[in-house]
Amino acid sequence: MLEYAYDLAASTATETFDYSSGVSAPYSGDVQRLRNGNTFVTSSPVGVFHEVDAAGNLLHEITTTTVGYIEHRKTLYGPPPPVGE
Image (cartoon, rainbow, N blue to C red):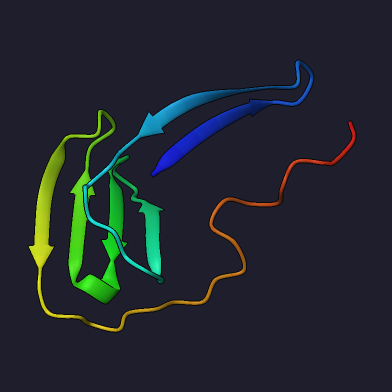
């Protein structure tokens, strides 16, 4: 999972977060920032769930059989940046 901060005025992007669990899911992976600032990373087709802190340290791991979890949301990150500005 990579996260970037965009500066539209300067036309730059700066990496702000990088976490790799080493787990690969062919579909339905998801990430969600929690209220406490940690990040919840799911690889539901393979049954792996991680909670990591702001530094990318693994705090909790749940491993189970495939769960088939999926949630439809309009967007995780808000609207995309404007094109051509």
